[in-house]
Length: 135
Ligand SMILES: [Ca+2]
Ligand SMILES: [Ca+2]
Ligand SMILES: [Ca+2]
Image 1: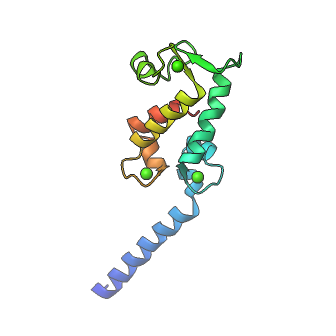
Image 2 (image 1 turned 45 degrees about the vertical axis):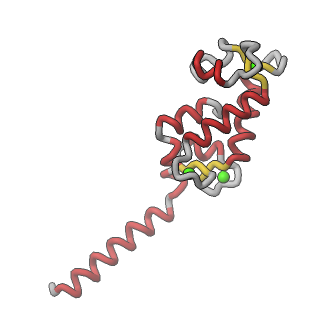
């Protein structure tokens, strides 16, 4: 086999790999991403994050009094985070404070600053912290 044939074979192999990746994007995406990505573009944008956050907020607040306390947020927001997310210091997080917290964690999980979270960004520690607020 001469060099030209070899490189042609390598090229075919590479394009074959790319084709496989393109045909299976949904299999590669995490279930989190799929669930949080209604427009199905493979990333979570700020609007989708806010909508998912509002949905979880309602789920965590079954008595519908509009606030979440430390107990309702346990495992998602620790004491220190709750304090910093509670500027009116009433010990609970209301929907507006929750929105802000989602926004803060969204930005922290978006180091490339393109305004969206992709599958890779969601697997980082910051990404996981963000997911705790939206699913
Ligand atoms: Ca999306
Ligand atoms: Ca509050
Ligand atoms: Ca990003």
